[in-house]
Image 1: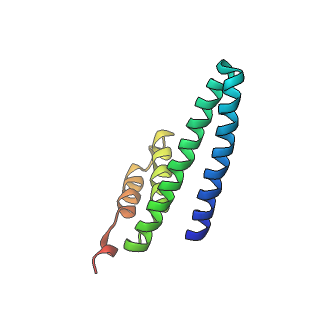
Image 2 (image 1 turned 60 degrees about the vertical axis):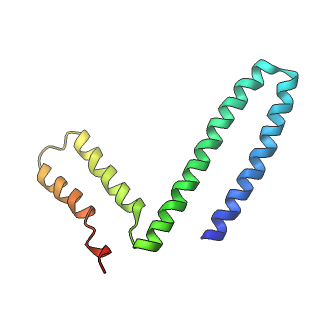
Image 3 (image 1 turned 90 degrees about the vertical axis):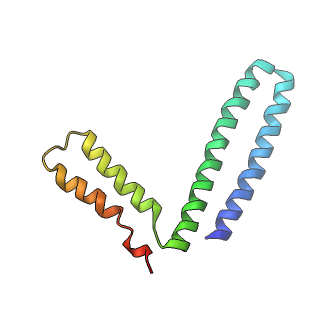
Length: 109
């Protein structure tokens, strides 16, 4: 998995450099149009790098502490959506599910 992530990261950097160089060259010809495109593309690529860093950190936490951060985050998000949608019939069950997902007793060796 680490090799694939490293390969993806390098291909992403290579592709971004080519596209960014094309946009910079176009900025010489039509500055107003390409200036906006450069800013938009820079925001998109920054988000890609943030996701790659998030995945890398979650993989390291999973290896070191045997905690799956993505599963915990998704269960918290699903419970949060239920609360926002007005699922008020059994709030105690939702809160108990939240406390179960934060159980860290597996960490103590």
